[in-house]
Every structure is written in C-alpha cells, then in structure tokens.
Length: 75
Image 1 (cartoon, rainbow, N blue to C red):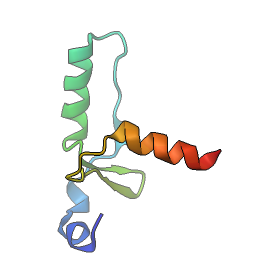
Image 2: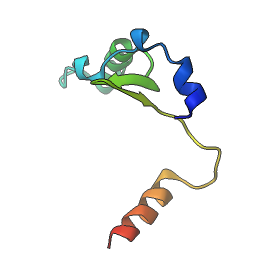
Image 3: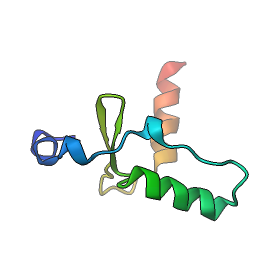
Image 4: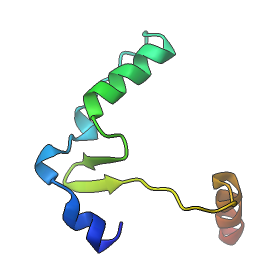
C-alpha cells in the first residue's frame, strides 16, 4: 500500500476479519453474501491491528505465474 492510500484510510470504519463468522452449511452464494455483509469492503479491512489493503497491478502476468515464479526461488 502506498503512503498516499494509507493516509486516505479511515481506520475507524474498517471491520476486523477476525469478527467474520461464516456458516459452512449455507450454500456458496449465501456464504459469499454473508462474508460481504460482515466485512464491508473486502479490499480494505483489518486483521487485528493491521490494515489489509488489496489491489491489483495492470499486468498480463497472472497470479498463478507469480506464484510459480516465487515457489521456484524456494527450491
């Protein structure tokens, strides 16, 4: 997260993912709906005291490609 984006975040409005409870017996769509209702913004939330901000780069490289490349450095 960039400093500019971090300064824009109102920490008081973020919800903590640790407080999200999903009923595993619900159908998939209902679980997703429940998660979104509880977390609010799935791209910016708290995990404990840590702000989690998810963003995507404008690139043709897939997440799978990035993970494959990362794992190859571990061997």
